[in-house]
Amino acid sequence: MTVGFSGAVAEYYAKFRRGYPSQVFDALEEAFELSEADVVLDVGCGTGQLALPLASRVRSVVGVDPEPDMLRLARDAADAQGIRNATWVLGADTDVPALGALLSERSLGLTVIGQALHWMQHDELFRAVSPLLRVGGGIGVISNGTPLWLQDSAWSRALRGCLEGWLGTTLEASCGTSCLRTRLGAPSGTNLCAPRLRPRRCPARWPGGGS
Image 1 (tube, helix red, strand yellow):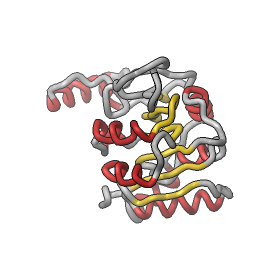
Image 2 (spheres, helix red, strand yellow):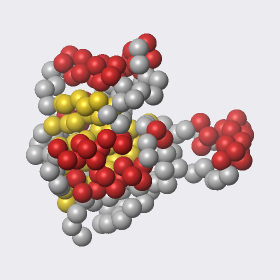
Image 3 (cartoon, helix red, strand yellow):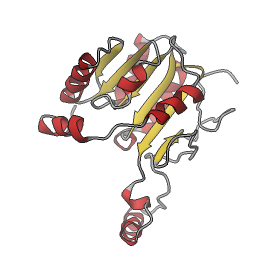
């Protein structure tokens, strides 16, 4: 299955899609207590904007994406940077349960979704990921910048009104689902969000086990 990010689109994505500032990765590392013992799963990894910077902070990263060209470019970028602890898997969010069968329970320190949750069945995804997360681990849903419909301008307000009328709901979240707007020290314009599912201890975590 592909979603239209193949060929030249993937090439432009790799070249022009902006990455994330280092403070985002610092915040994730601190919030989920990441270490060199951890494995991170990046669902909808694209060309590796999250997976590659995380690779230097953990034991390994697994990037999953439904577009072969995106994965090819992610692999090329990893090779160019000398990253050897990244694995690339062709698949979608609906394939995470099958991937989970290859991973042991509580084996993930973190699952990240960057600018991709709107393509996914997030309720099912979060439930599939939950048993794979170690105690203190969680899910990070990351948005790079404020969406057009949430910006403070007359054009954005008009767009938001149009979308809300069409969808029949109030648009407040920026990550594709209802989220906790905890910044965790991230720079302005970058949202680190977690789904409203069993939040414990830290409001920006969805821990995978323990109490």
